[in-house]
Image: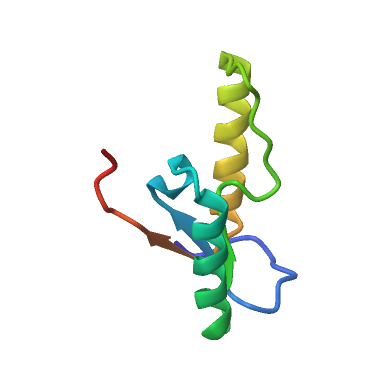
Length: 87
């Protein structure tokens, strides 16, 4: 995915896609992935960055999460996708 908007970021942004956000240790998983990205001069961007999740999801909440995720994707220069099946 090529970023078509002007970026003020100094490192290429990598969107971290996949089922990791559904695990209880999601924050630790994303921290490890972001550390790995940083070692290679990249900025890891998790779908959970800047997002809060309500206790009782609603359709409006789902739309807000979708828009946030799409915004994060559009701001990225590339995507690193974990395609491990989520069971």
